[in-house]
Amino acid sequence: MPWVRRSYNVTADPRHVTIGGSSYGGLGSAYAAFRHPETFGNVLSQSGSYWWTPPADPSQPANPNADAEPTYVAQLFVNSPCLPVRFSMDAGTMELDRTGNGRGILVTNRHLRDVLRAKGYEVFYQEFHGAHDYASWRGTIADGLILLRGKSAGSSKPVH
Image (cartoon, rainbow, N blue to C red; front, side, top):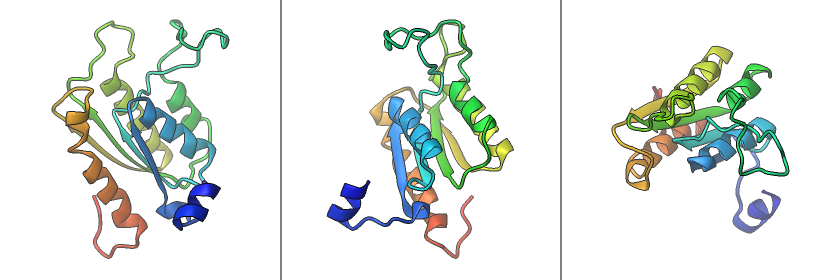
């Protein structure tokens, strides 16, 4: 971020800085804001992979911990004070768990949304009729950016 700010004249005010991504990028964006709310005040997460858990063996990061509950990221927020971070989240109605282990995109996004709201976070959430693909996300990225920008910029119009 220091390089970005020097090179592109980006604000240092986290209320005006959004980090975002889709799938693992959504997961990473939420985690970056969790770890550095002094830098990132807004998260745009498209079909975030919130089913992810740390591997049982760190030397084998490609092997997920099959015994872990798919609530690792949600638990980070449960176990910490409410941070000055706002979220725009979306997930597709066809992003279901077909294995029966609770690791689907839709369910874990709903769970994180509920955890964040219960903790007092401002969360804009929407579900789209679609699957885990860029064709679906292209329609929601603008919505998320507009919602996050609307309030952070001090807009006089309320954003719902």
